[in-house]
Amino acid sequence: MYNNSISIWAEKLRKREVSSAELTQFFLKRIEKLDPQYNSFITTCNEQALAQANAADALLAKGDAPALCGIPIAHKDIFCTRGVLTTCGSKMLANFVPPYNATSVENFARAGTVTLGKTNMDEFAMGSSNETSFFGPVKNPWDKECVAGGSSGGSAAAVAACLTPGATATDTGGSIRQPASLCGITGIKPTYGRVSRWGMIAFASSLDQGGVMARNAQDAALLLSTMASFDAKDSTSIERPVEDYSHTLNTSLEGLTIGVPDEYFGEGLNPETATTVQAAIAEIEKLGAKTKAIQLPHTKLAVPAYYVIAPAECSANLSRFDGVRYGYRAELKEGEGVEALYVRSRSEAFGDEVKRRIMVGAYALSAGYYDAYYAQAQKARRLIQQDFVEAFKEVDLIMGPTAPNPAFKIGAKGNDPVAMYLEDIFTIATNLAGLPGMSIPCGFVDNKPCGLQIIGNYFAEGRMLNAAHQFQCATDFHSFEPADIA
Ligand code: GLN
Image (cartoon, rainbow, N blue to C red; front, side, top):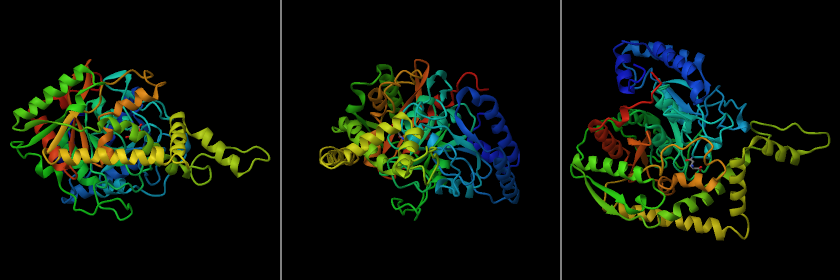
């Protein structure tokens, strides 16, 4: 029963076959017992969770509770949670307890969900392996010597090991899709602006987008319908009614055209990953969709453009961590002033990858270099976006690999930032264009999970989840699970 889907748990809760308090205790016990092996949680919220569960049970007893009422979930530790430690994976915020909830957290609370805890992540969401966390790496439940992917590795590993039926996550350049792929689960990053960024600690604001992880597309649809909202507190939030993504899951794929980009099957892609993903696309064809080869000619500019734009934005966003307003404050020596307070607090509390990005970003934005780097990167970003605009004139969805390789060994890429950055070659372009993307399990490479990436046009989340659900009705890759989690 540990592996029941959210929709099954929701039905059992409604029929009162199980109470939210029992369910919550069940998952808290699993976390306590199994998580020392994975390190997927930074904080668990035992007391608060049981209080939320009791409140949910009272609502359920009345009979008109929202769909997710009483369901336990986990939040990535980038979302501010009132009264609960929110670290963003950093020593800088290792003591930060926010006085408010992020809008996403609030949306889930209003729907009656229970917060089991806060999941581990790369420091300030910078990374592809969850090795930059101040709280230590997350281990992949499929192979504990391997990374879980990043930056939402904690959420992905927790869902894969069934320590929670679902989790929130964020994706700036691939951080929902890549760990979902490496951990064999379903993850979706919606269109930029669909999920509020308010209370979600900022990394690169023009790219950051919240989303969800679950064991299948049906559950992801339930979670995303609750998380998405218009939010006046986020100036990039889009005022548009939220769809109930569960309603369109069963639409036939007959007549759908799937674009398969040539650029996503070239250099850098593990050949076994390529054949596994191609087999998955063939399966989608069997369900009635047609495929069409397409070109996204500026794909090669995505990683270089991202690694100018994301650091530039992060250097501005992270300037707020100054030892005065939030988090860590260095101890000053006799005679040291405010300058030393800034320098030493930031030097002592940020990790290497965060420092590297701040330096690159500050350099790229400095007088004399702005036009050479930042302005060029913005031009590349527009070309990448135009590629997608052209492609979506001819196709309904785009499919390809999520990550170039299956999960790699912890430590294998630690000293090579560029090798790490290339983990996201297939995911970054969607963030630059603001498009929705998702990853679903589609097979195994080296006995480790492999993900199929589905990219949609703006606000095509319903169609993406529909295609994913139809694939999952016809295949069982999403129901495999790691060996020792029972
Ligand atoms: N791996 C990418 C990076 O390191 C993307 C991270 C993310 O999506 N948050 O920036």
